[in-house]
Amino acid sequence: MRMPATPETIYARASGAGRAGVAVFRISGPRAFSIAEAMSGLLPDPKRAALRPIREKSGALIDEGLVLAFRGPASFTGEDVVEYHLHGSPAVEAALAEALAALGARPAEAGEFTKRALVNGKLDLAEVEGLADLLESETSRQRMQALGQLGGRLSEAAKGWRKRLLAIIAPLEADIDFPDEG
Image 1 (cartoon, rainbow, N blue to C red):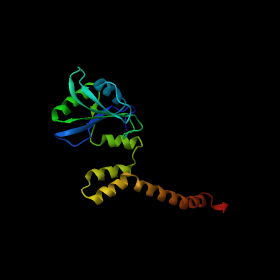
Image 2 (cartoon, rainbow, N blue to C red):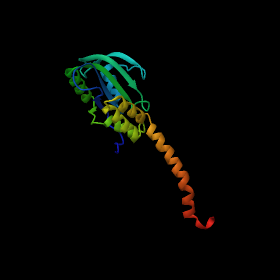
Image 3 (cartoon, rainbow, N blue to C red):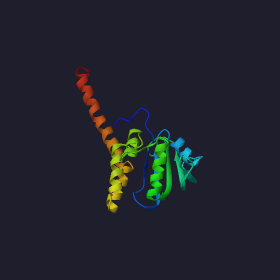
Image 4 (cartoon, one colour):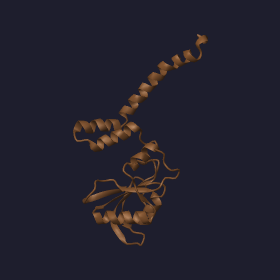
């Protein structure tokens, strides 16, 4: 689970695969902002969307779409993140991937954005499992259970159990360590 000292900048499609009216692409890492600025000019203020042309390194237009910037640590991964909301065609996706790679980003491995969120303390393991459950949910009950776990319900319960167990075990450890001090 160790991350490199200086993580690489990664990208991936965050929305479902295939043709769509809109597809979301995410870039995360130390060069996310500089790469996005090279492709779409001045970034909007953090957490604000702006319509921008998205261009290749040569200046050729890939598409026009919404750009959102999230400055770390106030992002899903805890790193600088940029999202592109573009048209969801295979041609746009291929051109975007080529342009991102030319600027030094690499494709994310499956689950790598979530792994970065875990390593950077944005999610704990129970919340990661809740996210996985939410993505796989098929019923309303499954969705509600997963949302609770993703929202920290299980983590908070475990913290309470830990606190109670420590309160019980601390005097026992003291008795073991100092048996003659009554």
